[in-house]
Image (cartoon, rainbow, N blue to C red; front, top):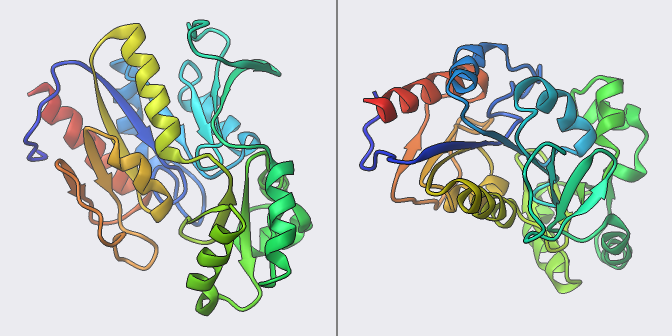
Length: 278
């Protein structure tokens, strides 16, 4: 069992990162998490996918795992709601393809204007200017998956030409040109106005308005997940690729999980759900 100081007396909602959390960071598979996913489905617990991945990347997972719930793309750039979700006019949204969308971040066009300024100071490349073959080589994605990863709308993963020794300087210079910057475990990400924390707070507000009190559980492994975990009732921090944990993060109800990816995700979610029903 997970020792928890707080037991929910309200509806549970689960928010999860994908790569390195629900998904294996090498194979991008979730099958070892199926027992927990089946328990979530059985109890009709909303599962909100919140990732730095693009809408095109998230959609195949969303359709299989949580098609009745909204999902959050590109580090909080936007929240995509299925048309069956009872989103009221109290929450300004726009119709995009088959979704109702609440925009949190600014569109890529505005980001690129500032990126051009930043590039005059520090040499780097972003995903949308790379061929899919290059993205696949950098990430381990298949060519088809890399094409989906290139369909950016709100956020640009960055490859520095002079890698991590430029990290602190890159954050500083990005801020000077008005860009938000966060590290996602493999890449720096540039965006404007979005953030996972802002997006999931909006989702929580909507669920509370529709259904009353909720108990939120969030799972992540990287610095870009911290803003999301901070607003959760229970935060689950997975081990990063290097075996460590994100530094300097504290939470009133925090679990640090040994391991990462779907096996660890499955274990901790089953323990939490068992603890919640005890």
